[in-house]
Amino acid sequence: MAWYLDSHIHLSDPTYATGISYIIQQMEALKMRACCVSMDNESSLATLNLAKSSDHVLPFVGIHPECADDDHLESMVNLIEENHEIISGIGEIGLDPSHATDGDPSRQIKVFETLLSLSEKYAKPVSIHSRKSLDKIFEIMSSYDASHALLHWFDGSKKSLSVAMDMGFYVSYGPVMIYANDKQALLSKTNPSKILVETDGPVRFSRCFEMKSGQISFIPSVIFCAAKILGKSFDEMSSILEENSKSYLGTC
Image (cartoon, rainbow, N blue to C red):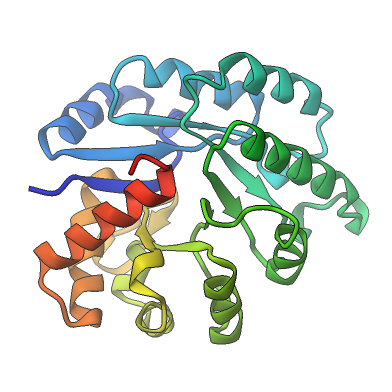
């Protein structure tokens, strides 16, 4: 039986606090692992603490572009330097113009590039937020190694997907793909060896998910949908995703 990976979820978010013990039990029973991403220094510390409870929780630390205007970069650099041996990856990092102070992206870019440099120094995968900023992400990443970089919740055009594939990025698709034709079309054009799946919980999902926060248990449904789109069985798709996960994480 393959193991499954949620490549991007905020398990240290307070939304999950009361049920986290059950979630971890569920992950262990279902052979599921999760890249537990962080938003800032506080959530990164919470993520590292959570990872102590189970080796199914893979801790990613970083500063989300929403938080990049806070002057906490030095503290984050120190946290990564001091914990690089136990950190699984760096994220969620990236760019987002909707969160840039006075429309100035310079602070976000400085944070992003600093954390990318640390990811290369310690050979860690990165989980990248790229909302409305793919062209700038591509420009910056041309100077960095994209072979262990994930464009989480990929929402670009087919043209930008082609660029991402040429540069060697991984891209991930989540529960919204189950009911969104545009996401299904993008998946069909994605190199199968570069596909990952995620929930991005605690984001809530409509339709069949009844506005529930993303749960680890949604992942098999996302895999089933991906398998159907690519004309594969569930087991075949699961095996592909397992190999992709190992490659992304640098464990193969």
